[in-house]
Image (cartoon, rainbow, N blue to C red; front, top):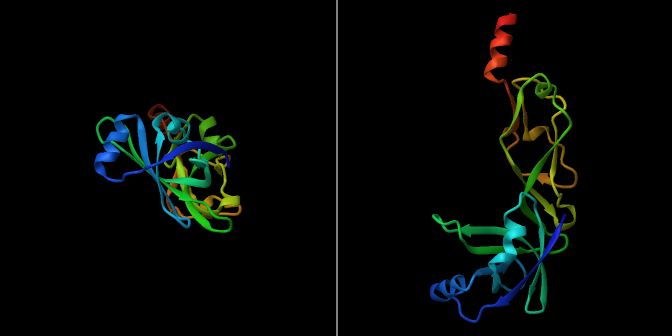
Length: 190
């Protein structure tokens, strides 16, 4: 899995007033938990661009005033109106300890339904998995080479390699939809 380095600075004061002052200074209040200690720190907002605004999943190498931590993003809170990043929670990774994370879906193969004129409609962009840090995948591979017109593939059809899928097995990942023009042709052939 890809890793990304983020440099943070410890927070002297905690609370609403201090958090507002940090945000006005283009800093994002953050917290790291899951290890021995809970660490409160702030990070320049620009450093989250490659981490939060991409479909990929990353392991974060946190550098908080010289102390290094390996973590994943557990939660990110955004302003409801202007979409400004308000707060980020990190979960510290430990060797051998399992973590839960949303991993992006990657389609493999060519669908006969798409070749026949259908359209691939993605229903799930990410799948929740549980794995140790060493076994966290970059993406979950979904083979669509057997999907015909009107068929869908469910989470239960995915074969996990070294991780456990937590998303419901009955949830559809993708469907091959039949366009209206093609429906007319299929109905005329009967």
